[in-house]
Amino acid sequence: LIPKKGILTTLTAFSQVLKTFPNARYILCGTGPQEDELRQHAADLGIADHVEFLGWVSGDKLLSQLNAAHIFLHPSELTEDEDQEGIPNSMLEAMATGLPIVATLHGGIPEAVTDGVSGLLVAEKSPADLASALLRVMADPSLWQQLSQVAATEVRQQFEAERQVAHLE
Image (cartoon, rainbow, N blue to C red; front, top):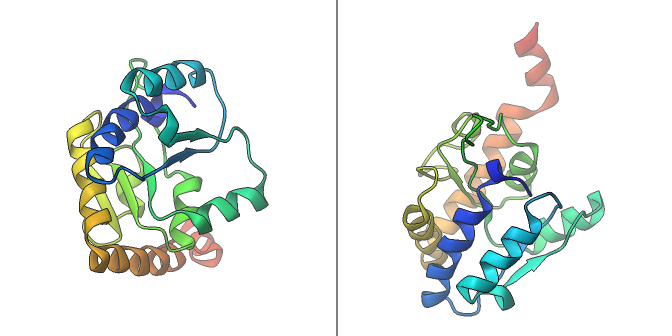
């Protein structure tokens, strides 16, 4: 849980989502130096009861969490020291399980997610855009289904080991 993961922005967006979907839950896996700040931000927004911090999780538990989830959020942001993501492995793992992706136009994310096809991509640091994308997927089962199916297919086609090795040769 570090600034480039965009969790502060996500918590603000999630507070807006709860106005339409009051039973929604936001589950975070991982630990990091920003955890106390994030917990406080959730409390300040009045959404702490809807946010669960699981801490570090093993591979099996992560897979279980991905299989139980409905949407995978990866709202990365460029930090003040210009730290940014490549193509996040966690996002590729989520796509492989068939989770629709809501993420930002950041770093290597657009190389893996095609906006409107295998996920929805929004501007960095925009809680309003992030909330809108989440609400769009949550309110439209056919869009959810399309994004889910294409995400799983695209990640298998683009990122399977043999294809990556051939690309390097």
